[in-house]
Amino acid sequence: MSAFRPTSLKYQTQLFQQICAASNRFARQLIMGLLLISLGLGFAQAQAWNALNEEQRSVLAPLEEDWSSLNQNRQKKWVEVANLYPKMSEADRITLQSRMYEWSGLSSRQRQRARDNYLRTLKISPEKKAAAWENYQQLSDEDKKLLAEKRAASSKRTTVTSPALK
Image 1 (cartoon, rainbow, N blue to C red):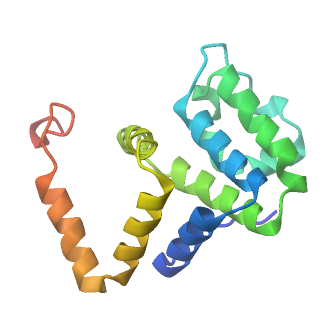
Image 2 (image 1 turned 135 degrees about the horizontal axis):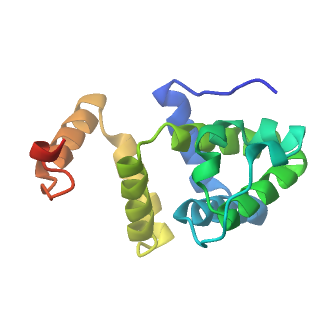
């Protein structure tokens, strides 16, 4: 299996829209399951990467570097995802690989921020999310950049994000 690393912002935007628009139950459950896996529930001892079969290692390759730091419950859920992989549509496979590569490239601080953002979005109705996404898509590239800069500037400094601690 070849490595898949989406690089274009346009592709990532299209991919996000496809995920948001996903209407089939399997895709929604899979994405929800992956997000729950990323929360790291459970405390059992982790298994070795080499204990996976070749196909599982191929599917889960983006997680290899972090595998030993995952607890057994998280590993078990990822193995279940790898076992479902052959039954997934091509679009779901691409989405899964893309998300794993993105996640593996994040620092622990960025991962925690992603988890926090996810938990915050659970409180927003799907209709409001769709409307906000549509409004965002209507913005010019310059307005999107200004919005991102404004968000970055308005972020509160905390003990964790203080420049003095970096």
